[in-house]
Image (cartoon, rainbow, N blue to C red; front, side, top):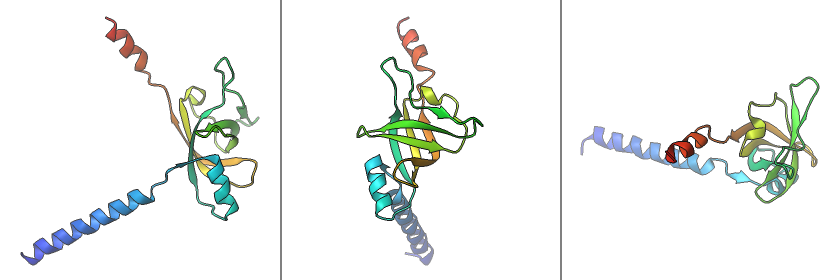
Length: 138
């Protein structure tokens, strides 16, 4: 083989190794229990916790407290293990926040009582879902 071909194969191999390493480093979803354990062991890395907003029997979101200045808020999030945790987010409430199916908070504990979210990702119900059901019935 020519030196150029070997160099090209080497670059491709290095790129594959880098991609595989970055996939392995990607954050997985954790629970609030794991996040607390990480804080107590001295790890301050931001982690991803997935859950849903706490709702009452009628389906209304409970525990949402918007600050007077409307620049930050707290809410109750229930993770996949059923653990309820108050979460603080230092940004305005995102549009359609209360309608989201699930919420991913990225952050960490600063103390044992409240989880501080640096970023919030939401999975909102599809606006096309009702249209698809209606068109399927025609």
